[in-house]
Image (cartoon, rainbow, N blue to C red; front, side):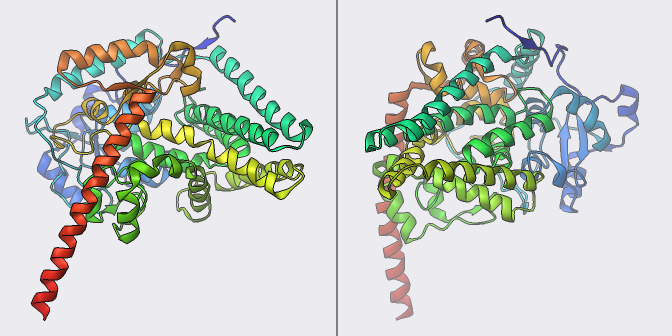
Length: 497
């Protein structure tokens, strides 16, 4: 099939806010101390392309959710913004929010609020050995690579790839329908139908992921509505919830207090820092490390795959919680209708299965076999670093490489991982079509080699072993924590008595 490519990013230069040098010079200067004081006074100020942008009026309108903006307050978010948004957003939309020119203090910091108690964004988790990396040079070369990819057309969408995927979706959907409607009434039939349904949901998740990142047409409303009509109707999960969650994950990857993708108490703790019952800025509550959490976490390496078999049910709950209770749900009505359509057709399909035990078998198989997607997702981050060696200076590129892992697989098996086994590349270039991530990997490896950044990659099996071992390491620390707590309780009791 000939390649059908639509080029969206023709200009090779890095995206910049479209303000003339004359207009920039006429903006008032803003020093670090002035920036910090204005943030204390309630302004949401973000540095983009050397300009201070005030986003108070925009934060509740941000398509990716308010937290993706709030986590950038007081920080230089140039790379985060340019990597996550179409060029026209950076060039044409951002100027309306620019209120000042940022005057740096020569410290080469990217964050100026790590010592401030912000109610909406916790300071980045710090710890570990100093990295001894030249963050300025890394940032420079990352931006040059980004510009190169734009110049060489990597951000252009090849629709022929989606034609092949579409045939796969249809085949899986038809197979599931045929087995339920026309197959012999046996446990093997409905187990096979459940596996086909699970594989369909897994593959559709990759497509919905692309739409959430505006990779298909480059137009936010079209991609998001298409994602809702596909994923909500066929999979029963809210794309709006996913977009809010996922954008936050990209901005604060693997940060203990801010990233919802690693906040899974009481079942999992990927760091002993979770033993401290920390506050989640995403969920707006304390993640209690209570008796239940201590029990599950102490067994998390043994329960990992079992819990993953029930993970999709948790996504249903999160989706409905978002649709019914979230203050930010721009397509709430459409999504409720589309998820309602999913419930209707799926219930109708299940009604064709003759007995309740066989119905339960099909539903459980379809949802439990979806565990493969959750394993694929968690593999790339669960065992990776959760603490920055230098939160004030660590640049976007270095943070994404530190917190993310690639999965090695044969080229012919790319379809099973959806191309998203190249997670480091995806985190560096979120809008890059996933079918091209493998072509970018050698360039990213070269960037890491030149700057001494560790590029972590494992086969799928080895990645599982690495992750389970890390979970086991954290689990082993629960016993120490319990002993310390008992000693503390005994000491308090002796003082009281």
